[in-house]
Image 1 (cartoon, rainbow, N blue to C red):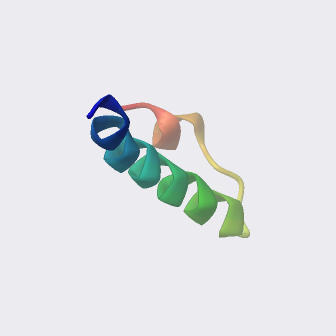
Image 2: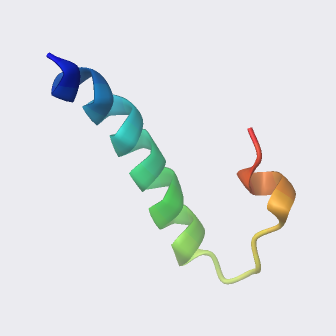
Length: 34
C-alpha cells in the first residue's frame, strides 16, 4: 500500500526531471522551487 502511494509522486518528479534534462537552456533555480 505504501509503495503504491509513493509511486505516483515519484513518477511525476521523474517525468519533470527528465523534461528538464531535455532542455537546451540552463535551468533557473526558481524553476526548481515549489
